[in-house]
Length: 459
Ligand code: SAH
Ligand code: SF4
Ligand code: F3S
Image (cartoon, rainbow, N blue to C red):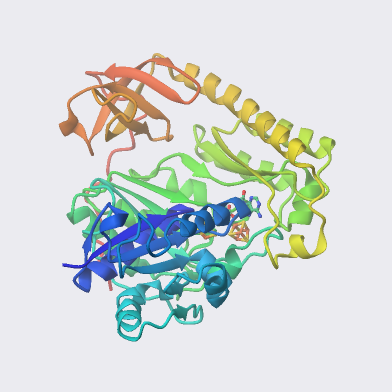
């Protein structure tokens, strides 16, 4: 039997796309392998968001030359995903030993492309973005048994000046509500208890669909699925929590009060140059509205340091804003000019690398201090934890997450994986809580299901 090997770079959407590519290959009769040397088809699913992500792929390609130790004789080498979409055939010049390049949509045709390449021994590029992306997901192809990602929209309609994603993934397309509910139902039937809904601006989901449903409608529909315990969603944009979103989701049994809604910068001058379409004042209003309805909501942010023209004063504003909002988690990135984006064409990448490094560390230090204090505040509480499995650092312990997405490590039997348990928190480090199984209900347990559960039928 022929075997395939898939390696994934980039975001969660790419991880899920890799599962779809694996599904396509498995349906065509290939078997998966974890050993690249055993593979007849090697697939790299790539990311273009920063130069560093692309460099990693290029150096990996260098190690996959024919005749090398990692590539079995006759193995077909395919590059899929954002870098393939962006570069297309040009990649054959960088890496003449690549056989197939596809982008963020046509990768579902991998089995046919592999057949064709094997037959003709001609390289192939397939990077059409115009077709609608249509597939029926087989719930069996997924990385974890108890949780899964579900893409609810692809592409992005915004034009943040630094960002390559609209180029690599095209315009926004929402999947119909019934299709998403049906996919989640099939995942739940197969043992999934937590889903994370994916989209670039996930809270603008639905606007092009008939009747213009919104994310709160979708979360409510999923809340009615018995067996589903938790629903998360990433990534949100601060402008799109409309029509009383927070009021509408706060009573949902499966809603988790942890929301990733990147601020990117705390300087209005920089936000304007990024074309983020909000000011810090508007972001503050969004936070106030969220907290009025969901007082314990935890917020996470992405930040870009060293955006063109970012001064020390701008950077200080970001630090102050991080502190003021009291974010629970931050991902900090050094600005990387992406070919063809507005900021790359019009603005000089003028912040020295050393300053980018320092600003990155400074923001992370503020975030660490906040996160440590938030962990301390949880000591003594009993929190509802969804068990993810044995802890990565200590196999004898279990690791799980609170509804607000804090990692909790505690002792317990492995068969609790995928279950909700109350854990009394005994101490906290910067990022992680430690505790023991409690014999009383959690202080932060989700609202009880409304009975009777409404029936949702996929039309
Ligand atoms: N759609 C999401 C995330 C897109 S990419 C959103 O809008 O929030 C993930 C993160 O990478 C972004 O939030 C941003 O912080 C960072 N990023 C995107 N382009 C970048 C660039 N050119 N240089 C550095 N960081 C970048
Ligand atoms: Fe990129 Fe902005 Fe779209 Fe996010 S919202 S994917 S940062 S263009
Ligand atoms: Fe994701 Fe990277 Fe593409 S972040 S959308 S894989 S550019």
